[in-house]
Length: 269
Ligand code: SF4
Ligand code: FES
Image (cartoon, rainbow, N blue to C red; front, side, top):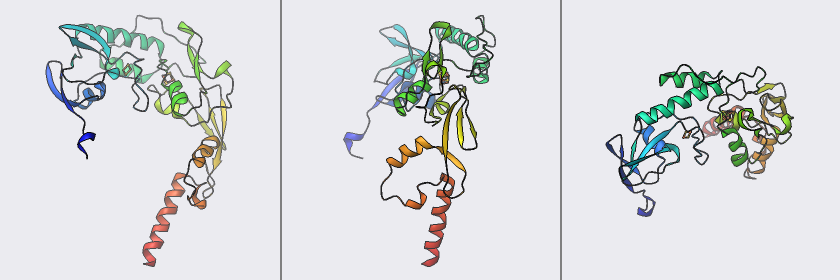
């Protein structure tokens, strides 16, 4: 590796202990790597840190003063000093857990996480909506909206309403033909709130106003396997040299195709 590509190692202090880290590394990731416990919900490596859940708060010490900051938004620099478990942080974290227990009363992920830090009850009014398409599990972190917008470039969902009435859904709670059914939203959701179902040749995004997305069928095994729109996008970006035979195959059949071809090649030699 050329010298210019090498990252500079810096010294940081966490809870009065010194550690080495690469300059510019994400502080939350450094702490987790060092097995220093910091609860977190909204960090997603494919997106810029946004600091929306506020659970990963740490105190950054500068000139003997401290300032609370979400660890996931801090880039490590030489001399950085932080504290992760002061009484202020614990108080802040406990109140947040209580708020999340009220906001997402059906989320086992939140319940388990809160109870790990000793919070099992909430003093806040629980938000129970019986026909909530996000099953009472959404903490409004916005990751699903951001991945749909910033990574997939689809913008099929967004925040709707304000204050305590805020929810995530499609515009006007209507079936959204822009949705590609890619499930990126469900994959990044920290509380597993997003529901979808594959029924025969269709994917139904239950949480997004029952938006229906047609699935393509594998040219080999004939099973539906991927949303039509997504396949079109993927195929448009494929190398034109790609073998015609495999372009409409599901991943499993494609794997088998290559294995068989390799076996044939080796047997002929
Ligand atoms: S559905 Fe999941 S990803 Fe989307 S805002 Fe709610 S908790 Fe976050
Ligand atoms: S993980 Fe840092 S604010 Fe949510």
